[in-house]
Image (cartoon, rainbow, N blue to C red; front, side):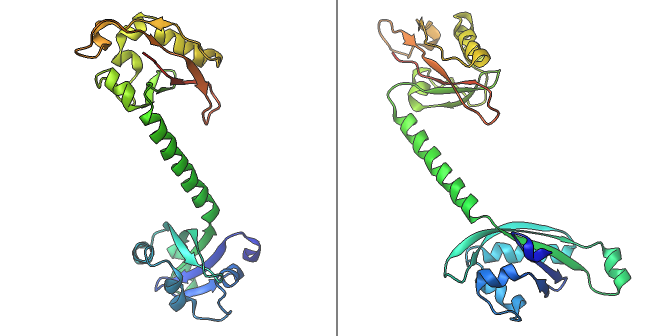
Length: 241
């Protein structure tokens, strides 16, 4: 049955001796069936990952517990791919009843495509954050019904004299925005999912930069952005002076 699984399945005893491994291992590594897997597998793990793998695997066997970790494994094509490994021990009573050392049942699942996709998303997120942070216009995102700050760029933080704090509700940080009706507009975006075209909000003295002269006016075009829950969120507001 293990031959039909997408992951490599294996069994090991408490000493670390590999008692069984499914054919997927031989297909990926290119090793010949019957080879000494116990001696060979550490040599196929990426050198940067081996210390952590050896530590966690050894601790699980010594302590009678499970393991769960990720590592890069060398394949027959000469390339390393990411795998997620997990293993659980059999009940001690079962081993004692069978009159043999305790065994662990493990699996190695190829997660390389997922890891690469995650890395690409992280790189895109870093690029987007860098672009937004360098814009001369202020950019802010709000999260949830409490309108908590999820992101703001450096321009916005400078304009509000460092008052904004990630995770804090906008109404607590800027009570004047509530009085001016701006937060009610954001809640309308949350409720309807429709963009808010904005109106002009003359900032109160508390929101003006120190040492500024004359007056300035902020406009806040706001639009909903998609979230994992598919709920509309007033996630992008760009005040321009």
